[in-house]
Image (cartoon, rainbow, N blue to C red; front, top):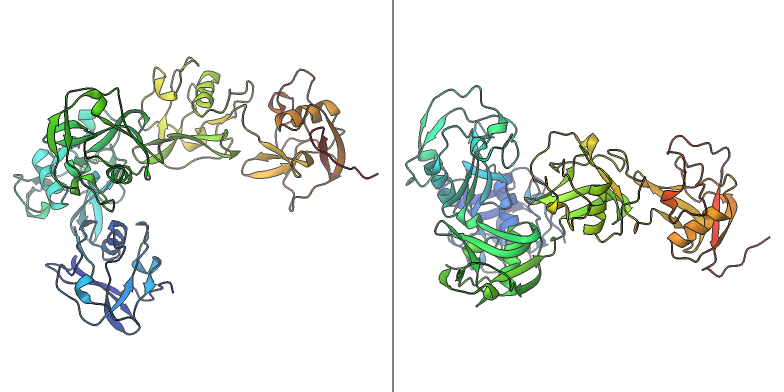
Length: 536
């Protein structure tokens, strides 16, 4: 049966050094009991720490790390995705009727004062600390390498590999996105050898002028893994940050399991393909990672060793989320709002200086044919997106193989609103359908729903263009019928195609909401590629 915990105080950590560490216990069926370690992972621990207001997990110990619990083992096989606000929202297996040894009790150690948010993993992101029972960001003024050293150490994330501050990187805002809520008012003065940020001295220097645009971010060495030169954030040569240097990975002892951990750590799904690159660079690599496949971070998979290597020895991987470009909201993969994947999240593209050249590159990169001339949708035609707006002012010539090759392509937050999100329609997209394959009600997808085309004395020329677009022959006949959609969205007054039009999207038509459809009759088309019997 699935778990449905019913009380807000049905979770606690016991036998740890603080209320934010210990064996996980849940209150269920009138008793406190433990959770078996089966399928216990970082997602489950993340929800526990969140529910208890303890920040993020540092370690997820198993095998009764804090001593064997008492009572019964009540649950096992928790299936949290990590985004739930409480453990009661996760699925689990009811285990209370089975005797099970407490030597497999799950535990967690949370950071109850500092966490990193907005990064690709728990060891990179915007620095946030606990302030009056809520989370506050830190201003990048006077936050230095020693402070970052303590943050990474407290989170069991190794050493800092990068410190992201607005002035240093020339960004107009916080590197990992702007936080919300309060901003920590004081300056930390760490020496670097403290075990917790809360042990560092603070200077009560006023920071009234500091804004969330100056929220500081940190990348720790355990979070220091990246994929380079693969065309997206989710494919490329594997590099890890080790001993203050980025190193390529040697294929020796590297496995598909190791690659899966890297993909998971970067928010790129799982490993899809692993191969020697044959075109790497440098002559020094690292090896020795031995992951079991369940780790959330490559840095926990034993320690690497440095060795001499050749370019052909370096590992190139492709993750399942390697496709860094997509079109959303158009009813298919070749039309819709343009979104790009960057730094672990999907964002949109601003329409500033967007034109046919940029649309051509988009369609080419997606293998969706060519951009349809005259069908460059108005901003937010496919609905406004959400999250960051990653690209704008690309300056493409139209000959590039990907948007990343355009002269001005830079991934950074744009000064645009989502009402300016770019939409694209490519030649391989089928925005229309016939209800019975190559015959039937003629319907077009627009703004999130299918809508009927009005009959309005549609001609055979138009029917033939639609049939060719759908791969249903070179000719077609058209009749009138009653819409099958209920309720019927506002329709279009029909296409008026010309003999030279090769696609319906080149045919003149009225904009939605400006139609002159005078009755309830809609078009029904029969294509030459379909065998049918038409009743009289």
